[in-house]
Length: 312
Ligand code: AKB
Image (cartoon, rainbow, N blue to C red; front, side):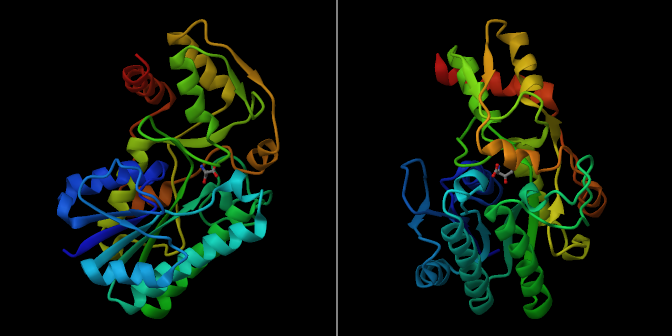
């Protein structure tokens, strides 16, 4: 097998995915890349600004890359601070990855989409995969467009692009940046360090979430699945669990009875209110055998256990 390039390896998902891919395929097979080297990478690391076509191509040729995970993007909340810049950045980086892949023999591309592709037109409970997409954020718009481009490159050029619509990802290994679901990670850090948490969403805002371990397992399973199992070339709905800030706080209080939370909703509330509350991921289950392992209780227990080691 040829080498694997991860673009955005220093991000929330990239940090963990890079290590998992090294475990699967061996350290020498994986090239981590990002705008900066945060010093945590062992093995191959390359500085890549994904808006720079030439730089991606250089690395792909140097290492004879056959698979790319393109994880670099500006997320929902940060994206709203600079709508046109976000569109430019999210689309340009995707086009660069697709074109470099098409022209340099890259065989497979992973493109992360998001529940942010859904907007007010969908049923909020068990939102089906084949829903009308009217995203409320520029990030969501870029992901909806990106899904169509992924499908286009598959149909027109035969490029094997695969994609998942991630819900909010919760993990202890890395911090999210600039998303609307970030509160569900922050809350654990505050609880374990013993401080109060002020939540930027209202108490009853239910959103779909997934534990990092499940998110990584789904990603690798999708990429390893035989091509004939991949029935959608847009993006697969992916679900783990659904909960509100009030519900997660109550679970945390079982371990930390003194933990306190208050609510000061800001502009992110409007984004969260436009998203589904739960996701129907039955196509992923039936096409390539997806099944989540973590629910709210087991995810919270593991988060607390792992973070305790960090805050001693
Ligand atoms: C965000 O909140 O923007 C992301 C996402 C759901 O895609 N975590």
